[in-house]
Length: 100
Length: 221
Image (cartoon, rainbow over all chains, first blue to last red; front, side, top):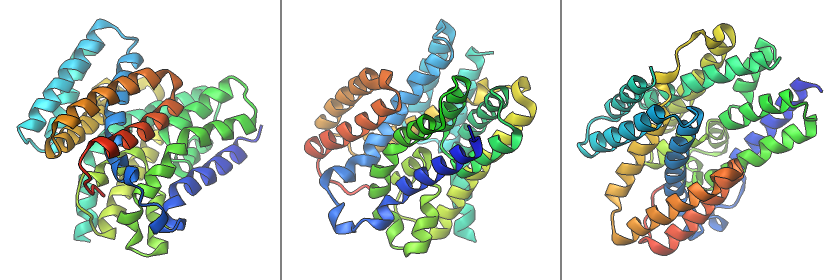
């Protein structure tokens, strides 16, 4: 198998999918549901990344607990309107402490 | 230049999340027999985390080239609705700049850009370039130093970023229907989790359709 060819063709396909919006007539693509795609992607990525994080850690109790506490801390700090980077840093530190 | 730097600084959260994942990818790719050059070029050209890991897994399982390519494309099908949704944001810069920005359209940049008001081309370019550079540099570090690097602390960066953006969005658009949508959405994501990337694509489309029916119409792009 030529891995260089796989990389090349896979990359072209990916790029073409990312470019669909540049080629399609904008009048045809302003469906009501498309306006909600950003919200859907954010929700799916938030939940899916948390679930996979727990899976990656083989679901041990400390990883799960660390992920839960870090999530609560991030939500709380965000509600308190701390800057984005601080909220993420608080979550990372909490998660890291539980996974030393 | 000012907007470019502003875009770069906005990417810090994503960069922190990209580095450990890219380093893991670099290490795993080398272990599965890819050369350092192949590993680095894959990150530069494909620039899609999940599908790159799948390629490595496929190589270990001796999948043929066609299966590998089709799997990668299937995983990244979600880029089509994302690209359509980003049309309004990038389309105003003209075709060439639009095509250039499309190269950096990944989950993380899409989510971050969707959560803020439309910005300049330089801002988006800075954001995309920083994320791409972090992904490539992380891959090269991982391919060079492998498992010597501690990753645990930064593993929460991307989930943390998504959570922050979700909280912001929910706060802005809070209503009774939103609570219902969050419940349905979470259940759907957990149910389709076992289908991998196909499940993610299905969840995105289903939640977007449900949101268009339940939530008051609001332009987020």
